[in-house]
Image (tube, rainbow, N blue to C red):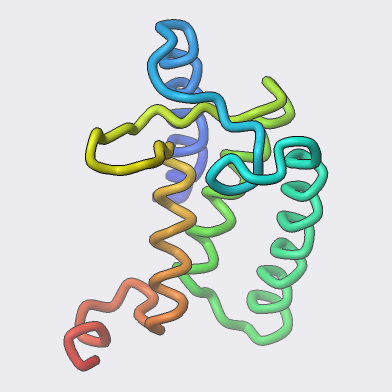
Length: 130
């Protein structure tokens, strides 16, 4: 479990590489849902840097380790690394009923945000109580 983040990060990069090669999915140069394509990399780096400071504050100052923040950081790192390598991320999970595509990093970010908003932090009892 200690190095799960490496497995997830490398796994997402491998999946993005494979789906890029077979040309399945969409290239996303924007920040979210393809918006801000001209400044996607700059905004992503800025937002990720701000998030890392917040993440560090929660861990080192407040002494709180939140699974939700870990998921957001992991997903953000996956997208940032791919932006540095290819200049964009590759969204390879596409469902015909949805008007957008996404990747594993996007799923991690979304799960982290929902978990943080609900205050769940990976605890099923908390979710049942709400």
